[in-house]
Image 1 (spheres, helix red, strand yellow):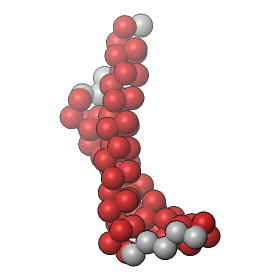
Image 2 (tube, one colour; image 1 turned 135 degrees about the vertical axis):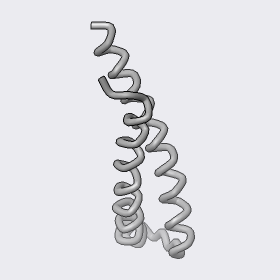
Image 3 (cartoon, helix red, strand yellow; image 1 turned 90 degrees about the vertical axis):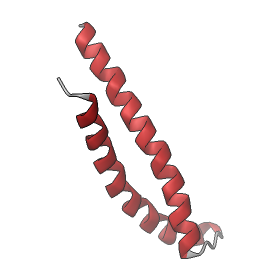
Image 4 (spheres, one colour; image 1 turned 45 degrees about the vertical axis):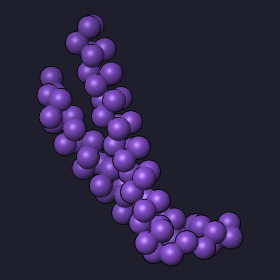
Length: 71
């Protein structure tokens, strides 16, 4: 069984790595759609999505852990 703390650590590690990938992807993809964001804007956009991703990952981990415990 994974503790709540370890669930948070795992999810945070996943999204921190994902943040870097997302920012690099934004820098590469946004111009293809005519979106020209500065580096600070790209970093802030990435941060917003990272916070959303962290909350989603943690919540899903807890749901699946509860399902496993109930089985």
